[in-house]
Amino acid sequence: MSIVRKTINLIVLLGFIGSSLFTALPVYTEAYALPDTGNDVNAPALEPQLINDNKNAKTAVSVTAGSLFTYSVSQNGNKAPSTGGVVGQYAYAASKGSIGLIAHNYLAGASFYSLTAGTEVTVDFSDGTTQTFVVQTARRYQATDPDDYGKPFIDQRGKQVSTRQVFNQNYKQGKVTFQTCITKDGINTWGLVFIIAVPKK
Image (tube, rainbow, N blue to C red; front, side, top):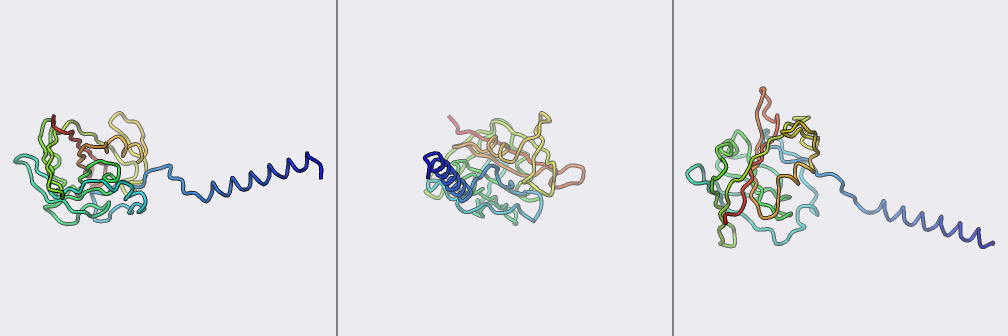
């Protein structure tokens, strides 16, 4: 067999091996659906390996916002609690070092709208520690498909953004993010609002 033929065969073999390895590995290019906080039907659960990649994530047990509200915090994966008087800690956000607190807008989430810039928020953790945060900003997004929070959103500038971008913009390491749905035009899942609080200095 000539050197040229051997070289061609080797290139073909390496190409086959490379393509096999590539297709065998899971590639995540897009965030999964954000939690639905307007309906009883929640967004699909995220895959376990994407939820538990931060073993040092802090577990919140309660949250207080001055005289506005005090809620216990449940650990319900990526779903908002279905009962009143409690908020859920968003597991995927926790895996990224963010404290995501989610609730339906017809339950505890309704009180999130009372949070304004400068409001102090205190979070108690399962290890006995407490940390105070200060509300800094709020962002609102319109869903392009109110029935599917895996589809793109429209931000306040009128720009279309993916669920991955929405997540990355609002869930930051070391910060608290309150998430609930926006009701508009009779649609309970018209959009999402995120209220972000930063550590008090």
